Length: 355
Image 1 (spheres, rainbow, N blue to C red):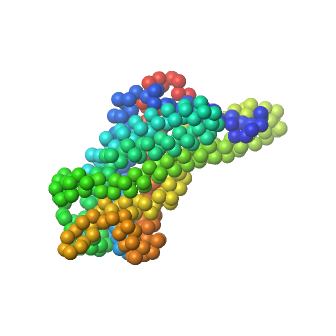
Image 2 (tube, one colour):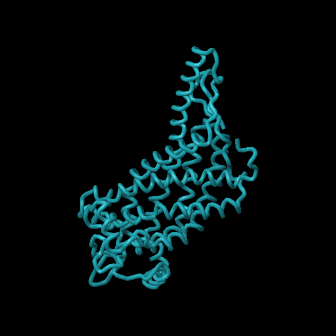
Image 3 (cartoon, rainbow, N blue to C red):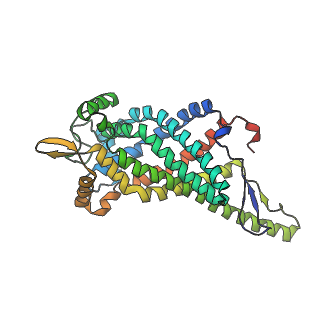
């Protein structure tokens, strides 16, 4: 793959390692290694998700650091990993669905857009956005019930002194673990209880993934464009001073490629977090909180959730947990994309043709 950073004939070309599409992958290796790698990444980032969730269900704005110290004081380090076992069980099938939908859509849409005459950068952005959209929708079939169970466990305190800021709408049911929570939710609310917030989850993650993958594609081109211009000027200086240059061709090493991918992913994660934060807050509350009416507890509606948020802290309440979510999405995006690209290279059928 090569990129040109300008329109002139003398513009430098950046020769990147060959892209790996769906047909080039050894599927069994791809899914097996992917499950192992992404489980490790999820484990490292899980405490940030717990902090974000507790901030979102809180009735008042409480600093993330204060919540973290409260959890450690009352529940220990285990409190930061409440619901992780359940989340991990859902990682393998959800990631398998996500990666399959992502690669198949990206390959097919990318080919179709190029045939329709779109410029390569535009075709890449469209293919990435479509791939992110379809992958998120496919993965939510597994992730929504996993989210409902794991988030119920996240906001449940093991101490009589609650480390979760009091919210009377938090489910009063006590769970002994993921399986117990799954059974009790299914018994009380049926299958619908496990898919509580499914619609808002689609509305949150589908555009979030579309924005992320499109932003990632654009950010990469911007960064490579800047790098190309830098080396072009450096090459011009070498020609003037020494009479020789590299011919306007730049071949970045693996470390440079990984660094650009990581920075691009962090930028895309920040943009996506900011745009979709209100939807994520509403989704989390729908999945965790109940309304109480005439002594009976029942699920909140989207309208009730929004009204409660605005009543508690105005429209800015929709951005509770933005700090942890921004950090989580940026760190997650950076580690996930570098792991993902590394995984694709490990899983390629023909390793010799990747340079």
